[in-house]
Amino acid sequence: MSGSRSAAFFDLDKTVIAKSSTLAFSRPFYKGGLVNRRAVLKASYAQFVYLLQGADEDSMDKMRDYLKALCEGWPVQQVHDIVAETLHELIDPLVYAEAVELFEEHRAAGREIVIVSSSGEEVVGPIGEMLGVDRVIATQLEVEDGCYTGEIAFYAYGEGKAIAIRELAAQTGWDLAECWAYSDSATDIPMLAAVGHPVAVNPDKALRRHATEHDWPVRVFAKPVRASRRVPSPPGPAVAYAGGLTVAALALLAWALGRRPSRAGDM
Image (cartoon, rainbow, N blue to C red; front, side, top):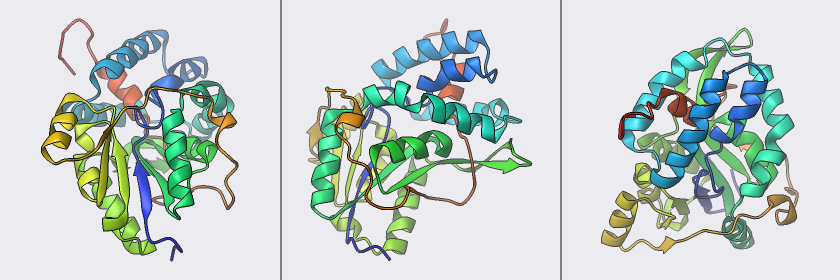
């Protein structure tokens, strides 16, 4: 059982880093032969739209369904290798200085740091290790014979995030009333509502409205900084992963590939 009585939970995209974590890997996946050039162009467009609008419930549901077909047959080790080779180049410059400062404040207060993301463990786990966090909760795809089957074992989205947080708190002995949570998206309202100290960060319109109605603090993160200059090496073992399956739920890439740019609002 954890020696800490509480934790701080952080959504990843647009909360800890300035862009979509998974879309950032679209070009390396192309070079590795996992996606084609058209997919890379769509991912670039989707990154732009995502930064402006975020991802709503409808787009996330369609993303989940598309994900199952997209990743089927991808070799697990190849995805691991691509992420490991390009992680620092792609993600290191995107980390918000304000998020790193909060990591330090919460750690000084004795809280564990947990990243909770709809992207897959093969993406979220290495980012968590780079940032020196204690644990990650991420989407999981099933694996068989070293490849992804296309079946989703756990989708870290919406109420799923809140359930995972409650289960982890029960295992560690954390008092959720003393925990903090940070996110930019209204889809994470269940996660934010699960703790005693919810904070909206760079909120979309729906979350900003909800935060105002419920007197939740709103913060703006706007200063990406190379994390390697700010984040100390983690003092303990490697970051702990919620869930036991090896997975690569490349969620936002699937959302990008499923979009039709010519039709406004079509997810």
